[in-house]
Image (cartoon, rainbow, N blue to C red):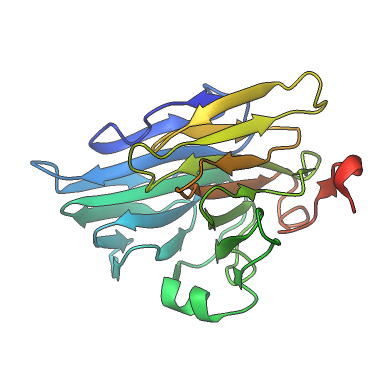
Length: 252
C-alpha cells in the first residue's frame, strides 16, 4: 500500500500498477526530466492517461499535436496514443487506467480550474480546512480517471470526515512539494481499533486506498500536499467525484 520516494528516478518510471499492487485498474508513475535526460517517448497502449505538471514546464506532443504545459496544468491523453514529453527541470505525475473507450485529447489549464467554483473548492472548518482542485473531473471526457490536488492548511486534517468509496473507485495519494522537515500521517482503516495502515508520509511517497477510510493530517507549521487519482471500477458509471460513504461515527 505504501511506495516511498517515487520521485527519485529520472526519465519515466512507473511506480504503481496492477502488476505490483492491490489496484485493479490504476497505475501511477513519474516523468522527471533533468541533467542529460530531456525527453521521453511512450505509448498509452490500452489505457487512458492523465498528466499533471508538478514543477517546471513541459512540451507534450500527442500523435503529432504539441502542447506546452505549466505547473499544475493537466492533460488527458486517449488510449492508443504516441506521446513525447520534453522539458528541463520538469516533474510530471502520470496516471493511467485501461479503457475500451476512445475520448479526445484534452488540455486543462490550472488557471481555469482555480477560477471555476465547481472545480476549485475550500471545504472544512478550522482544523480541517483545505483547498481542493479538480483538474481532471467532470470538465474532461474520460472513462475511469479522476485526478486533482489537495493542499491543507498547516497542521490540518484532510479527507475529513473519514470516508470510503471502494465499491465505485480505487484511489492513490501522491505527496508532493513537502520539503523537509514537513511530513504527514496517513491512515487507512475499516475499523479504527485495527487500522490496516498508519504511516508517516513525506515528499514523493504514495499510498494506495483500495478500500477503507483514509484521513490524513499534516504536522503543525506545515501543509500536507497531495495529488489524488481515482479509477472507476465500472467505466463511466462509477466515474463520480464526491460520491462517498462517510464513517458513521463522524456523519454529524
